[in-house]
Length: 151
Image (cartoon, one colour):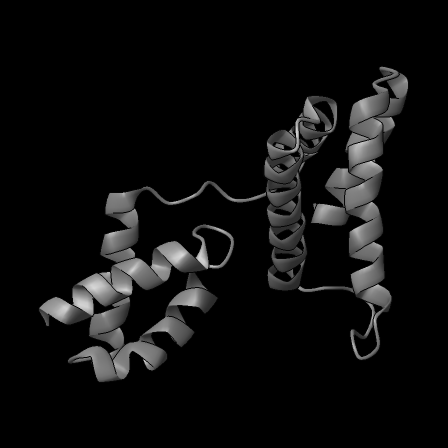
């Protein structure tokens, strides 16, 4: 079952249970996917990787908005954004833990044959592609720097 089909099924379930907040969040996700599919050069259906990128972007937006609203004293809006983030997070793969991330990056460094900080760009290119959706770019970069500085 594709991500779009899962979301459609969840939309139907939210309609049946009359869960208005979840329904709004799911419709927002579906809308983002549909927009990405109809963008110039998208060519119809999105790949799984492209769908994950759309979800990661949406999750990051919700998280940043919630932090901004909380800082400005608008807890009602922050709660809404946090709820939407939680709905989006259901469709994202489980994030990697610190140890798992280190192991994955170490394997990528060995695969690429990196020997020092000069190879950081090559390692980051491969790592961000392989770990998309499972780790944030900042976390990947920090681990890559740490491991390459030891090499």
